[in-house]
Amino acid sequence: MQFPESEEMKMSPESYPFVVRPLPYEYDALTPVLEEETLHFHHDRHYKTYVDNLNSVLADYPELQKMSLEQLLTKLDKLPVQIRTAVRNNAGGVYNHELYFDSMKENCGQEPSGALAEALERDFGTYQNWKELMRQAAVSQFGSGWAWLVADEEGKLIILQTPNQDVPDLQLYRPLFLVDVWEHAYYLQYQNRRADYVEGWFGLIHWRKADRRYEEALHRMDKGWSHQSHQAGVAAAT
Ligand code: MN
Image 1 (tube, rainbow, N blue to C red):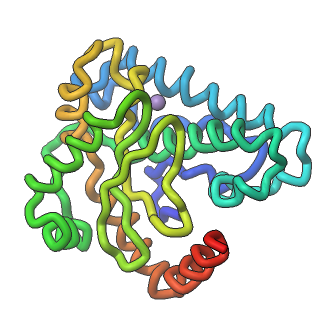
Image 2 (image 1 turned 180 degrees about the horizontal axis):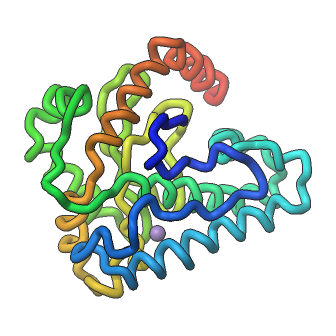
C-alpha cells in the first residue's frame, strides 16, 4: 500500500531488514484512552520484538530477504516449513501493529467521511449498528487477537476477527483498520476491562486515513485486483 501524505506511518513496504516505524504522533497524543506508558510498552517493546524476531528468522534465508511483509504473509504455504510458524507470527505481528498504530489519532471528534462513510451505511445500515457489531467482534475475540474492518474484492465492508497475530487473507481482503485486543494493548490501564478500552478506541479511529485506504482499495479493484484475487483464490483452493 502506498499513502501519499508525509504524515503517514508507512506500512513497511521494504524488505529485510525490517525497521521499527516511529509512531505518527506523540506518545501522549492518545490520552486518556491510551496513556504514554501503555504506548511506550506496546510500541517500543511489543511491536519492536516482532520486528526483531522477524529479522532474526529471515537472517539465514537470503532468498526470502527481498520479500515485502505482504508477500511473506500471502505466501506462507510456500515458505520453508521450519520457519512458517515463526514468519506467520512475527510478520503478522509487524503488519498488524503498524496498521494499528497508523489507524489512530488524537480524539478530536472525528467521524466517518467520504466513500467509506457511505459504504458503512450501505453495508451496516447506520454507524451505530456498525459500531455495535465491531464492538462485539473486539470484545468477544477469545484470548489474544484482533478485530478488523476490511473491504472485500467488491468493495463491501466486512468485520473480521483473527486470533494471535494472524492476518486476514490479503488476496481477498484489504484491511482498513483494526483494534488490538491482546491484553498487552490495554492491561496497564484497564486490567480485565477490555470493553472499556474498546469503547475508548472508537474515539481514536483515524477515519480520514481509513477512507483513503478504502478509496485506494476501490481503485485497485478498478485496475484488476478483483480478477487477480479470484484467480489466486481458485489456485489456493485446488
Ligand atoms: Mn499488540
